Image 1: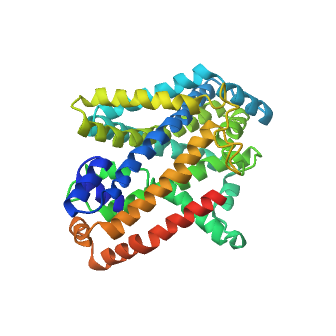
Image 2: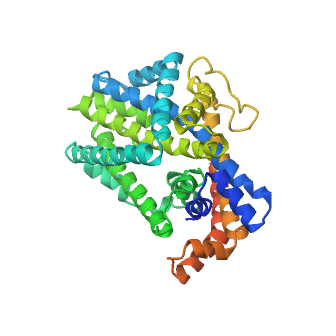
Image 3: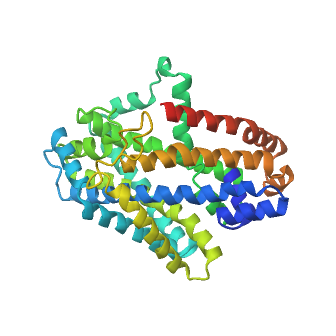
Length: 396
């Protein structure tokens, strides 16, 4: 709610919105950090997220061609390592994702982003439902439901609670900057708290559908659900390679993954282009492809982290992070440092710096009780929660 409201207050990019609010309310320019971080996070996030999107697209094609048929765990792991180590293949796949993203964002909000999302979101939902229906007949649906929805209260500790809160925190994109960018386009009549609730609700619904689509296949194939990140690109191809209609279901699964990643890359590029439009008198497509070129150049490093740069360990001087490659270092820098710091700054900026009257005016549809509750949460609970999430994320 705070991020969307700040965006609508300024009707500009995150940097422009922060600058406008600071000037209007005569507060310290230190709080420009909110705007700068809200561009830094999507920029660096885009550089390595585009690598994963490229992998997903490649795997969708390979699954459709039947490349995973008869895969064992060892064969799947070896195939992924061989694929991820190919420098030009990865760079070109990443570039394709970045160019497609620049094309959509370059067309603008109405003709580009809105049209793309209107097609991709229903497609994503339909693919999830199709996979879930398939899962119901795969033989592992009952185990998946039990695995997902049977609570084990003995496992709930302060640490697991904070890790779960952190997952929710990152899942909705808090502190990334695109909520602020999209908020700038929100009409005055829009009810921001209701919009925030819809975003969180749809995110949760999609997450539950994804669980009911993926885990039945995992259990029906006799695989372990606790494979971590390797579940997607190593374990799932084994499942698709040994099941009926594996080519079709596998292609749908990885296409689904690509669509989800692609909608995120679109959201990541938008705040950057919105800022560039304020700074440079150039056509939006020119700005989009210019920014995409810079993202691609920086993104080459994580793209090559499984190949020619596989031995590079940029965080080797930090205890516990010695084994992270360049891709892992980018991910750690964005998710464990930039996003939490930005979220903390946003909660402090919204709760302690922006005048209460300004927020009340912007959230005019909100009841007094709801507004007071929100104000207390953003001032006191949110900063503490963000710091706790950050701590447990680092030590965990």
